[in-house]
Image (cartoon, rainbow, N blue to C red; front, side):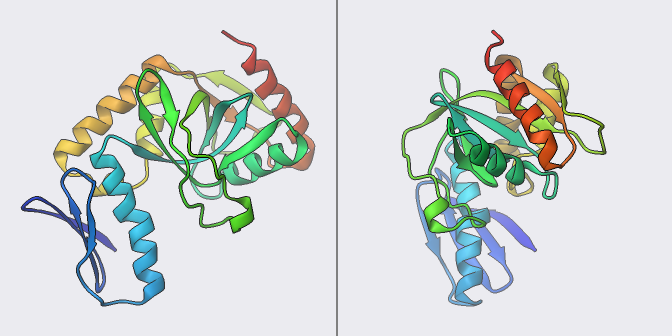
Length: 224
């Protein structure tokens, strides 16, 4: 169980015997205890601690698979098991014009527009599969993977309210955020929902459906 406590000048993140301090500007992280195993300490550091530190700097980690097409990012939001990682991987395998940006986690921030902020460690990928670019990537659109079974791939545009809710639901570590950070997070989600393109995407998790999903991605790329 991950716990977060606000203290003077920052926050304590605690998981069992592992403790980290995160300064309130998110720009300093310090391990306070030698308890717990090294693999656990690494997971805590690169998971909840780093996610909190980024949030304190206005960067939010989305639970997303992502690809790059023609220099722009396409995000697939979804809970574990919804197929976002598989979809991103298979699309890049099937289409040489696509590059995998993220497998499971992507930090994003809103400046002039929504931008992905690589690199971020993707625990499920081998070193050779990690995205190595450092420049921010403009996000062209976001697909929210629909739950339940569907007969064929299809999308529908999301209006602002359900789009904002989807972003809230698919932000990692939101349960750690203190009230002041949560307020900024909700404002961010509302801003993205109003400015960016979000779609709900349902598709059968089969190899045969990928060609249709690719057609949908191509079609949406041409929409204003």
